[in-house]
Length: 240
Image (tube, rainbow, N blue to C red; front, side, top):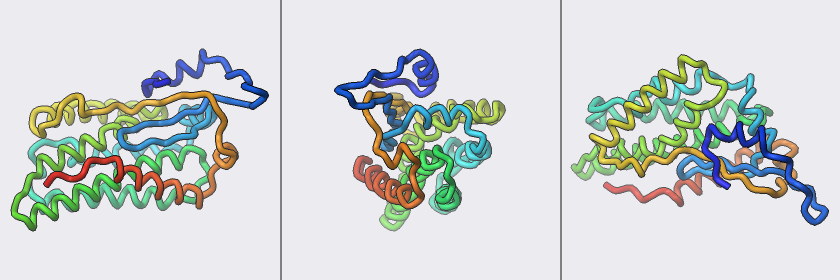
């Protein structure tokens, strides 16, 4: 069952607890899908934590989007010399966040880290494409940034609609995202159908024991590596 990002709270309020199946204890099992990134095996408690996560860093949203003009400004980063430093700033911030949270026992941290690992992959792809086209003498910055913004869109939208955001940060980022969508459609040759909203899939089943009890830091590392490979595998090959 597919549920829109913000409709999950209503579902959790009205959905009855699943009945046992063949004497097996079952529960609602959630998966977050944000573009090419999927985060499976989330429990009801994981989702509830998002709605009351006192450890959520409200500066995360502006740090990955509002202050990162390369994700929403038009006609500013038209040369490789301007793009690569800005991409590296975003990439390094995400890398530092992921590294700093490895020992954090908060159940939602690995979810945030997984999404930011996707942004790291997208930044790397953009940097590599810019470097390749620059050396070939065929720079197509609008195409490269258009793909970057398209890929990052569902991740950014997830964080914009995080329930623990500051209201002013939420509305500021949402205005910029709406502006970014207009730019993507009019200047970066994207189509509206190319922009995928994040969503949940919900099923009835049982969770792996280690995820129910809490994922250890070494499990997070293995999961991150697996999902980074998945992002690369599912993503379209660069067009240069």
